Length: 212
Ligand code: SAH
Image (cartoon, rainbow, N blue to C red; front, top):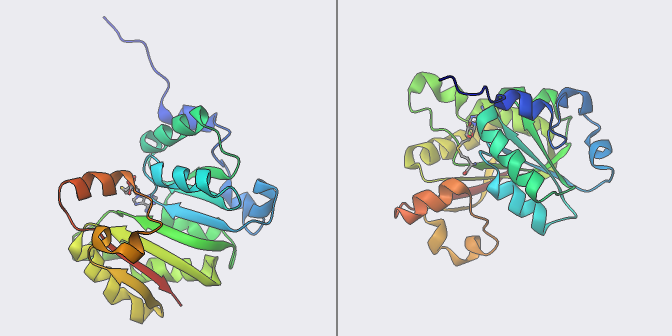
């Protein structure tokens, strides 16, 4: 017996109004996408989008863009957004390396990285989202007083991320090596899917907030 052919994630994504399909066309003009001047905050590597959807739901006066490279993962986010629509959130399916062709200088108010892929091999260090190469890209799109927030349960990735700050010209504003026991940094914490999973296994969660 042959199974019915179910449309692929790419086709479903192409048909979604919650996805910005030609994001480069909005570079420097994202306020037109949202129809207001509210600040724009982005999550790079949003996975199924729980974190950014919760933020968008609780902060209607801030605009959000969730970025994810894999269609199959992004599709889960789209399905959730269709069930509970939000007017201040859009998704983009793209590779983060292209970020400066999608946002103009200073167009982004805040960047979130949550549980980014560790790329443990040295020769893949440039692919790590908190690497100096990526910090250089974020420097271009983030407004001068904007911050970047990064959470992970991966000690090696966090240590690497800390070492990248100075050479890239960034400075540490706040950090913890056990977020869930840090009352101050936990105050407005929004859990991500990975955070829920890894913290329930007993892993400490590392977090920093950085600026230039
Ligand atoms: N932020 C979510 C998911 C973490 S898993 C959470 O905390 O629950 C990391 C996610 O980032 C994966 O979905 C992966 O596909 C995506 N990702 C990794 N590298 C990326 C890149 N270079 N560009 C875009 N997305 C990326």
